[in-house]
Amino acid sequence: MSKSRAEAAAGAPGVLLRYLQEQNRPYSAQDVFGNLQREHGLGKAAVVKALEQLAQQGKIKEKMYGKQKIYFANQDQFDMVSDADLQGLDAKIVALAAKVQHLQQSCRHMEAELKELNSALTTPEMQKEIQELKKECAGYTERLKNIKAATNHVTPEEKEQVYREKQKYCKEWRKRKRLATELCDAILEGYPKSKKQFFEEVGIETDEDYNVTLPDP
Figure 1 (cartoon, rainbow, N blue to C red):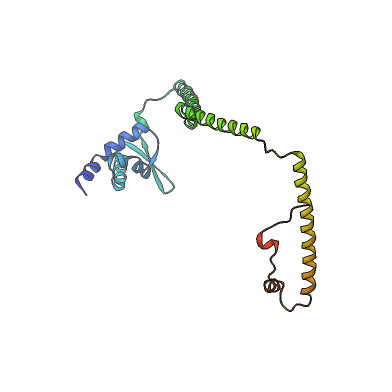
Figure 2: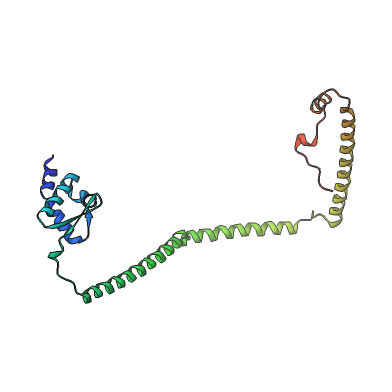
């Protein structure tokens, strides 16, 4: 055992006695060890030994709960508390609990407000955003002005003519595709190979080969 660990073990009874008296609640040896090992450098064996020593000296009390020993401060050393004192403590607990709840709500509100502020644009960022939007709007305005000033607009008559021609050519496309399909199907009835092999040998390319879809009528 190192010197520091030995010194900690030697002072363990005093440390544990003060701790149990200050907390005034039951603890297992494991609880005490977990709560004090980092601050005082106490080992588990030193904690168990010190607790047993204090219990034998009558400075603390111990009770068995199943297979576990529970240690707590000797209650004889504390003054008796009257019912009025207990009621006063209960009222104080209720008031403090309400205060804690109010503070928690205030903290949540401030956290939400802080999150909102952090996500908002700063003044310089907002000014930069405004300038960029103004520049973008000016570009759209100039583009609209040029479109309105152009002399090559498509007239309604020209638009109607283009639409009629589209309908005409799509109708012819549909007709020729149907005739070609019927002709190929007739040939394939007596063709010994597959449709794909027939198309490859003849050199037929379909709309599907080029991902072309016939427009709806």
